[in-house]
Amino acid sequence: MKLIFASHNKGKIIEMHKIMAPLAILSAEEVGVFTDVVEDGTTFAENALKKAKWLVEKTGEWAFGDDSGLCIEALHGLPGVHSKRWSGENKSDERLVDFTLDKMKEFTDRRAFFQTDVALVAPDGREWFFSGQVKGVITAAPRGLIRDHLPYDVIFQPNGYNQTFAEMSHEEKNFLSHRGLAFTQLKKFLMESKLFNI
Image 1 (cartoon, rainbow, N blue to C red):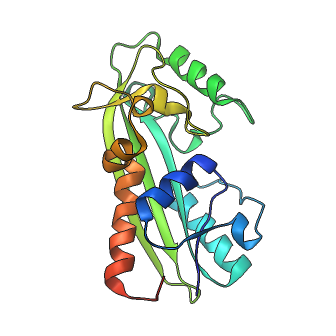
Image 2: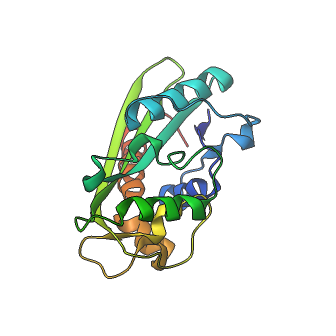
């Protein structure tokens, strides 16, 4: 049996492998799936489940999907589930950052949080969910280098830290990030439940 991560986002895949080690997990491309499902859910959990179910249907194997996003208090939770597309379809990472900072220029309340929901789906249809959240603030300007398809890391500074996610090492970020928290819960569940050998 295989366990497959329903993502084509290179930045997410790198983070997932670092967090989930030593578990052997395949990406969608590694099993010959090169297309994405439409993320039209109204919550992160809905999108995560949709991705995982879609990959189970394509492969007949165990799969998990995640959906993550930045939620800004002053913008009533935006961009939320639209984090990847809220500045327009197929815009660059730099454009997403500039667009977000422009939306925030009138606000002194910079509070925000990152949310990740993960859905694990078995070939027989059973489902499990895991969630992670980290609170912080939106910085006045980008700091650090944009990692592949993780644009908001340069403008998100988690509470209790002086660095943005982009200024941290992968290990530092994964220890406290929303994705790190959710994937760590999934890893613990997989290792303790012994549902199958991976």
